[in-house]
Amino acid sequence: MHSFKGVELIKKANIYFDGNVTSRTFIDTDGSKKSLGIMMKGEYLFGTVEAEIMEIIEGHVEVKLKGEKEWKTYRSGSSFEVVANSSFDIKVLEITDYFCSYIK
Amino acid sequence: MHSFKGVELIKKANIYFDGNVTSRTFIDTDGSKKSLGIMMKGEYLFGTVEAEIMEIIEGHVEVKLKGEKEWKTYRSGSSFEVVANSSFDIKVLEITDYFCSYIK
Image 1 (cartoon, rainbow over the protein chains, first blue to last red):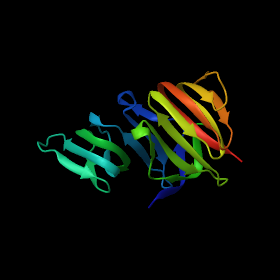
Image 2: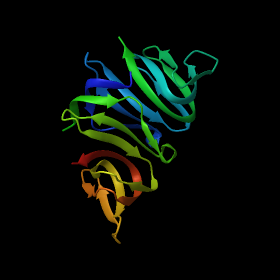
Image 3: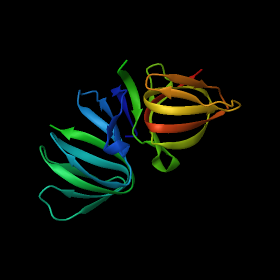
C-alpha cells in the first residue's frame, strides 16, 4: 500500500527530541490513530501507552525493548511490536522514515 | 482548520538535504497535491516548478525570493508565495513546521 485513502490528516506536526524525531498523525478510515514520522540519526528512548507496531518504511535502526538485553536490527520493510505501557531504546543509524500504528 | 479530512496520504516521506527537510505529500479532496513538512535549522535553496504558497505553521524563517535583494521574516501563522519556475533561499532559524500548497 503506497498511500492511505480517505483519512483525516492532522495539520500540526508532532515534534520530539528537538525536532530529531517528528511525525504526522492521521485518523484512518476505521477511526484508528496512526502516524508517519522521520527519525534523524541518534539514540532515543520512547515510552508506549498503547501497544504499537513500528514499521521501518526506509532506514536502519537498532532496537532494544524494555526488559530485553539484546539490540535487534530493523531495516527498510521490517517492523517490530512494542507492548503497552512499556518503552524501547532505539539507535537510528540512518535517517529513518517510519509508520506507527496501534494495536487494540 | 486543524486537519484535512478525506485526503489520500502518501506513505513514503520526501527527504531533502540529507533529511534536514522532509515532507509528506497528500492529495486533497479536490485532487490537488499538498504537503506538510519539517525544516531543521539551516539554509536551503528551493526551486519551484508550480507556483506555491508556503505557510509557516510553526517556526521562524527568513526568505529571499529569486530576484529580490531583501530577506523577509516569517513566523508561525504567516505565509509567502513563490511564482512558478523560480527559486527562493530560506534560512531556518528555528525548527519549522510548514504547509505547502500549489497555486493553479
